[in-house]
Length: 329
Image 1 (spheres, rainbow, N blue to C red):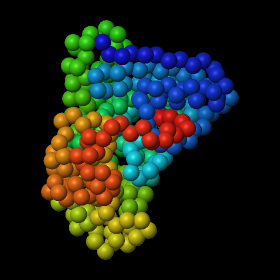
Image 2: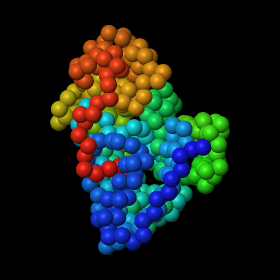
Image 3: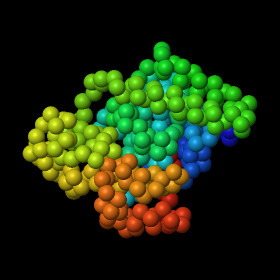
């Protein structure tokens, strides 16, 4: 049966309670790297967490007193996340900020975001949320799902959204009654519904405007890393501007737009290999991330990581990464 654990804190001193809370998040999710800044509201902290690990999926139902936290990048060459998160606001209000965009969630709203990029979560009051954590490679082959379009509030009040979140609530409630023979089938059903839900939401027109053109550039690139034709010219066409304007907007960055494309492709491949190598050959990894030639992929990969893709695949578990002080939300 799925792993099912519960955790509760009752009116502990705020600092002690937050440390215990974040420690449990880290224990359930697993070892990560990355710096964390947090603030608990008030003098005391209380919270309840219900955790279910369903095959390759991790599901959290959590409620607590208000707090804020901010995840920041620790290194451009090391991912501190193992996937992306889809979160439903059940009670209270929460603000999530990523890439300069702020989204407010009220009860019944959900969104998806990349947990491998810096973000900030502000729980404005006592709250309850359901969070589904999905491995990154589940998204790598879904060209119809655009994370940048999913970073907006979506309703769970009707249609597939209601079916999906009601089903997920039932999985959490009945976790102890799911036998091992059914676990993988239920996980597949959850992921199948989720991907259709995300695909539907990606196809909807959203009206948010990035803080500046750099956010739009990076958002478009991150959604289209699989496209071998991705280039400065195609970015300019998609954003209805000129290559000269893109150069001007990006001049303050430490790398060119083309270099950013190559770096993000390699980092995406690293993130997949850091999580799992199952089903991935060097060739399939290269072609799935916009490379036309394996030799070019190998040169770029070694340029950024210091190892060839083959050596990276065969490496032992790296124990040299320094763990940061705190943990993840």
